[in-house]
Image (cartoon, rainbow, N blue to C red; front, top):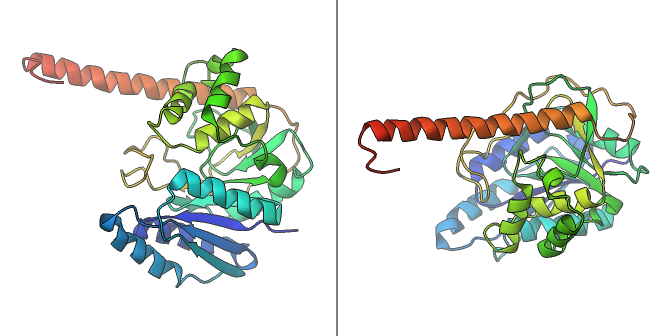
Length: 304
């Protein structure tokens, strides 16, 4: 089996990158895999020391077939780093596994990714492989497909990444022209379209919403595992685009994923589970806000 290179994006979080690498080293295919690290440069003097600490740690990493570190002197930003890095590596290798510096993986992550990349390499309807499973309260099969793409531990081929569109306005225009915004928003459960508008207007710099929209518009699918092989440890306020929260945190798989070829179609149960999950999250958020406002009302409603 041709193993995909692992591309890891790092910046200024020494503790997080260490957790990510140490978990990856425990994967059974790590020693046979190439690891290519893109380390972004500091934004200012305030981040320089952290970036230098990360750079020092990266030079100590072992346990992989080959390690290549590509350090940027200037700050490119997460989106530009990922778009350029994935494009360069996938064009060179034909396939790629992508991680960021706040993702901790199960020991079975690399095996699942490489096996799935091999099984579906010639299936044009499959755009990517994803390692994270949302903590939906539904029973799901061992693997299943969802429309679009995702960003917490993923893999793709050159043919899959070729559909990526960096121009958010082009994507939004097409979603609106085809009256797809509500479906794109998971029947109104999650504001993907607003995220895309925010990217266009400079309120966020998300590459992931553009990846999601591009694959969605092409009606492409992503394979997902029935149990999560990835945990995000960056929901602590330390990330560029991540706030503080724990509702996305789930247990890591303690067993391999049993991979076999399945029908290439979106899993209705998984989509329903994802819609229900986001709706429940929204209701909980509004419930907490309601409780807070009622409490302030009792105190005289001086501020919100």
